[in-house]
Length: 247
Image (cartoon, rainbow, N blue to C red; front, top):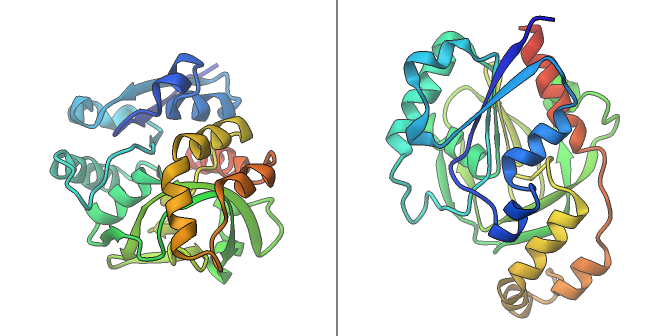
């Protein structure tokens, strides 16, 4: 069996408690891949071997607890990675902070969301382009529940991006550049357990946000009460791998 090489770029890690349970961002992606023919490499942004990038069939860019708004020192280095991935047409999927990095690197803007943080289960709307896109194959509907945990969002897209999904909180919940680079603001790799952990870890932030807009926000207790296992978003990881291996 011919082996495929996939790269996971980690701009940052999850909480130490989750890392101890092998539930860091990269672990969750690998667990969902369900592929025996893939060899995974995990690198931080400054440790990516640019000269070796061409051997990878696909690239994932994970979430992080960093912020482009307050300053991310490896942004210029990440731009080189994206430019080379485009030149070599290597499929790339950015998740949450990874999504923001890709959009920023390709001429977009990232800002602190004026709607406040978005945590828990959120409902997103697929655009016409989103419904037809292979990344959402099998969803079979125009709306989907997803896990979210972010305070920044993409506020403007660069040229040649296509909006695939949105909601009232973030206009660019999913985007595509050309036909092989994707970004999603939400976390398709999360499990119910991981999402619950993030709510508890950010309890004070969510409580403060609720008090600032109780007509539109939910208490952290309510977010936990309504928590459930989501299966549809996980299809995005598998769909991306299928897309990447077909190019």
